[in-house]
Image (cartoon, rainbow, N blue to C red; front, top):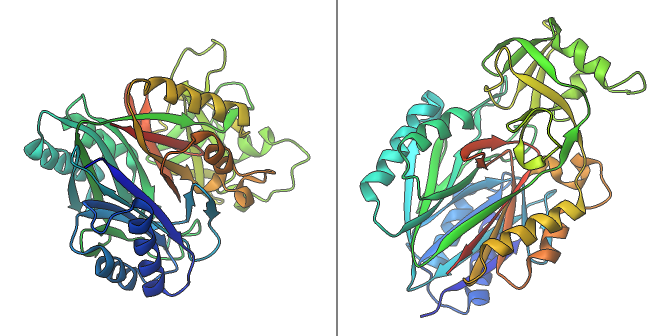
Length: 400
């Protein structure tokens, strides 16, 4: 049997109806009655248990992973303000799927990554090709604290076989952390988990990163930081430095810097021509006004690191170049599925732009089954190392 893949979405507010509609639509679009595996995402506004029960009633007890999302993207739909859900089903005699789950990420991200990696090692075979990883971004809601992808993927990468390509994301239900975040693993709804699917057989996965930021300052040196908290930049309170860099004409209060201010780290040559592929960006999660500190999405900015304030600028030409680049990588094989992991901050209401970057991806990707979702953190390789990313889109194409 040739590989068959079907994608469908629903924006029904009733969780049971949404699960039924998306699952049934995915099977119909694939032209199959039974799937081997499914990727399943639903809005944080849905009852996750009712949604998954409905999905399982249609698809049966097949392996699946997924969880909460801020929005859904398909070849003809983009939505993030309501009750969006999306499902992709797979049936194949040449591509095989093994699913994994590791609990208690909130008790230690690095340990969770190592344990997940050891599970994969024990189940690994010679024809394993690619890994997709989704984890619970939200450690707690009040005060907001995140599970850190930096530590999770350091633990995973230390034991993951080097030939396996990998991408992933941190799941969120909404940007304000008002709703619980869930992970789906087969027939279970979980929290504080890492879930993953390992693809093996006659397949490959290529990835490219769609950046959206350019430097808006000279290099700055972090002079005091601990964990995700950056207290001083160039020996001055960090908030004061950011306020000054934004210029005299900005109207934002310090509390409004959250989810707006982005710092970039150049992983390439410091004074070479700007290359977006060399940058890992870090988004500001919150501010601590009494200490004039920045609380970042990730804890990897350290004392002594050089950063730049980044200006958000999604470039349509860059998206086209990125997609053309990945198409060149897969020449000689048959692309069967494209998957877009997109930062929720790139959606038009948050980005403040005039267009959706996902719409350009839809247009350029071509006639391949296509699904994407909006998330909190994106993960892909930068300079041969898995890196958590902010304000990016990670496009994955799976080929036979």
